Length: 335
Image (cartoon, rainbow, N blue to C red):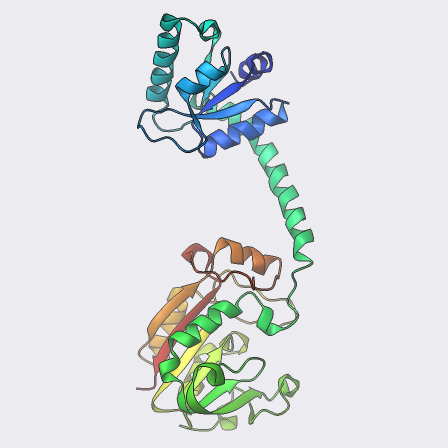
């Protein structure tokens, strides 16, 4: 059936693709592989709603007499075909369009398996070529430092939405921007860095490890901001217990972690990524409470991560897609 369509289309003045949706665009792409560039989209006109710049089938039939018609819609293709046949019959009876006598209708649903077999290698090749192109583009968009990384919009947003807790004595983990100073209410900020990696911030106030309570101060802080920190520890539950150990009664932990899609380079000491369920389980187990869970991510920013691109400084991400969760935020109280 598909070969017959191609043979007929090569002799026709145009291919009218009845249905300008996803399958219609797929059909147009595959037709172009056969050197057929005369395909045009047309809406049925059955609903009375017509997109700007898209012909109705009736208009297309009159503009391209003798064309081949391909019904590309998946749902209701039988009804759509009957509608097109009715239009052709009216055109034949009306006269003035001799090409209507020779116009043939094909239905993509009738050759679904054949179309899939032919189209999939084309689309895989297209996808591979686009990935190579994206890889080349991404070489010009690498982050120069941590604050340019793709996840910083998300982390900033989560800390800002919990800024009411950032006051009094605040602990933050050194390594980049100090969120407490940016969003806090005149906090007294102390910085902590790993005793094993003092080079991260040689001027930190504390050199300690969340795995080792003997290196940590007890009930010292009204708020702890731990952004992308617990992903590096050896024992998650111990680390969270020690974060709670450092909080004053009633103090708050503002936590962000990498989501299930997030990955780091091989040498980053990255130990864990999280799902919503695992993160909530850990906070409930250690703090017996949590609030303000948020997920952040999108298909576009998932691609930024895969190509390790910097955040887009011209447009902040506003829509978040759970399927592409890259960063999660959660807050807990030392009750």
